[in-house]
Length: 182
Image (cartoon, rainbow, N blue to C red; front, side, top):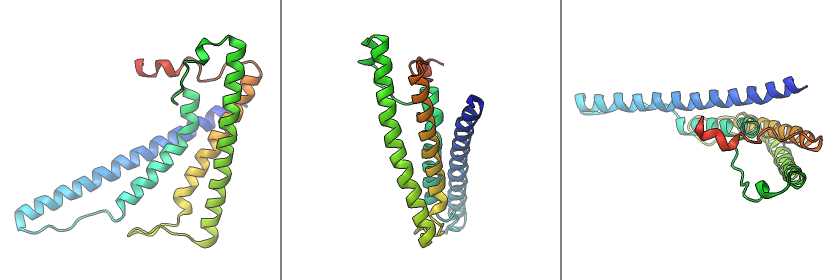
């Protein structure tokens, strides 16, 4: 089961990375088109008007997808900001209880967000909601990776809570402090 869960977290992180690459490619292509337009304007006196329709909308959709798909991977890697000023001063049993309580609270909040994002996605499907940009996109398309990312985060938090309650240290323990030194 551990291998399957770790695969899910890594796959979501990999998808998030692909969306970041898509953002870079889209912005790079638009910058090249802007440059070609400026060169054409300098040579001929008027620009051609080259642009990628709704590229700002697409990069926004890709940013939301990459952000939410990366949440579970970042949790497991210790990439989330954690304030450990208090918990590091607690004895180990109290620290474990605090970690369990905070993880449970995060699980409840993530489950709530997942539920309502799923309802929003279903509502967008039911009513055929579309984006307002030059290229009209069915809204369920950019909402789906957000809902998936939240669902995977909820799964990761449930996984962490079970591990903590069994006495194992959280997966992020000792990792976050060393992220910048790697």
